[in-house]
Length: 616
Image (cartoon, rainbow, N blue to C red; front, side):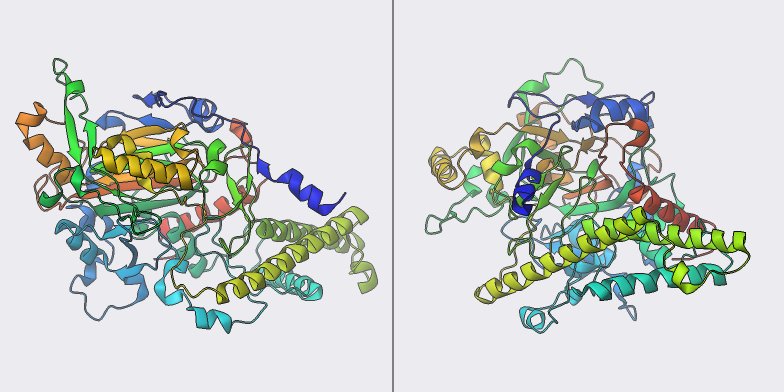
């Protein structure tokens, strides 16, 4: 069959699960998890890829919420606590990678800046809304990002991970397109592993893990500054009890949004008609959000009350992992759209395939130049090939050892090289050819991208491929009070983003202590609103009539400063990411053992740290 025809058959939209049927649809809300089994949650939500909100009592919270409030974070995290004077401690480990606001929002491809935790917290407490703490990846480190001139001087054979890829942590640099180099390098790797195991009297299930690998794995799971909580599962467990998915990572999200007296009405939203995009950036209008009904005031009428909020936006995007989002402080609004509409959402990258479970793969081109193709559980294809080759070679070694033991002596080398049966040899050759093709295609595309980029004089960095070009305001036009501006933006939307205004979407509000489960591939724009904005609106009794109940302290109540003191409009969340399932079987939700084996290594790393064998 022609390879191009095969490619066309494999691409496109294969999503086959839950979708939003109308803008009037409401998200499911779980109010009690005391009897929620992981099997029930998997069958009702995970397997059918259906988002769900949690609004559960204090005594059922899966983390200690109060420990993560802005005034308690320093003590809770114990992250470089001995270096609060900021002197003689400039190691990279002491810094966090922080997003700087760009075009009135966050989530862009701009370089991150380095900050110490204490400095960031102080900025947030002082009401500075220019910074946002999100994921912590080495490839986001500005010291590791080469400039255009350096990139041109790289060797043609060098390849690197996309700095925005969420799908892997394994370094796969130093690929070569020479088939023999690939095979020889792999043989050396396998032989090296075998020698290490023999020298340490290890069996095949007890491979040696270096302190460096332990530290890498722990920091990938408990991303800084959460790393030291590996030893405090009572504060932050690595996985909620009702999830059967493999954990990928846990992140702390933290920023600030403050009220500006000059922006007390929707007149603050401006457009620049001299620009093709109207200068919309990631602006969002002031938001009128219905005030939630207080838990113990059944006689009130919250439907007639609203909170006027000013926030910042992440921009519309999707992730490559299943997401459990827990709000600690502030207020969040998720605007979510189904993976089924991904082709209509004008992503930065060109979509190659939407898998049945909603995971999205991208073309490798100038819009996502360092992307690597993935399969439906987020694993990078080349890594899967290496993993399969590794298993084949180890199987060969085991068979050779068995023959030696039975025969009493080692067979001649000629016979030794024929240890694989014909099926295994064919499979190995097939995998090596597949790996070679992937690498060659990648390198060809890299060279094409480099030539295209040389013709571009702009130094503006693209947003990640999984982000949408759609300005967030198009998702919230109903909240824009200026009719003249709204009509101009509607015309802009219909011209440059036709069909977007007609798409079905859900808007989900989260208050402190509430959670949202969002499957991989679901697009979401997150608007963040600070704690002091909510409190200031609550104090305006003439406008609101009642107050919002936000008491979610749980264990550790009374720590830090007084409630609301020095919080600077903080909004804080804990975010769990999980490997997306690629089967609908509760007991076997992954089609092979790739991620299971990787998770066993991470669990081993956690045990080594907890037992004191390795210190972080």
